[in-house]
Length: 142
Image (tube, rainbow, N blue to C red; front, side, top):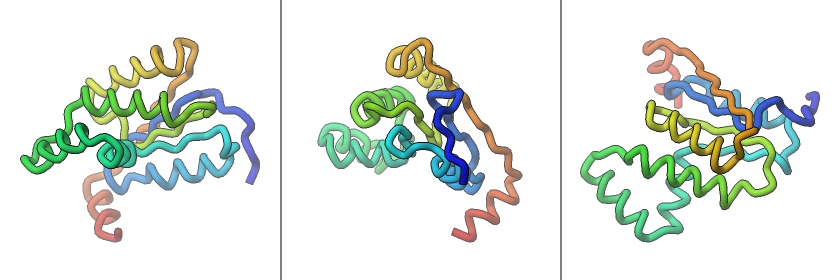
């Protein structure tokens, strides 16, 4: 496989329904990029990371999840911002899975671009379309 030295984008967000191919496409792209400068981030991994390393966050999110409440956009954006700052030092390309999922998170992505990556950072969002029937079939195969 041909290696890509540098992408035109500093962060690429992959958005799709479950079973939409985000992980597959990210892995294909990551395989062609230098691994030492590429970060692969899944929002579920970010939230699990902070649940295991931050007791206050764990208590707060555990209560929300036990009540069936989705974790708020402000928490999700804040934790992603913190994760990129702490865990992605030295990375020039970030591949992001499962974010943004809401309009508020899209604004959060803009804040991450401006305040964490820098105003010159180039961000792309790749949205994969999938019918409900196909998504359902793919999820059943898992």
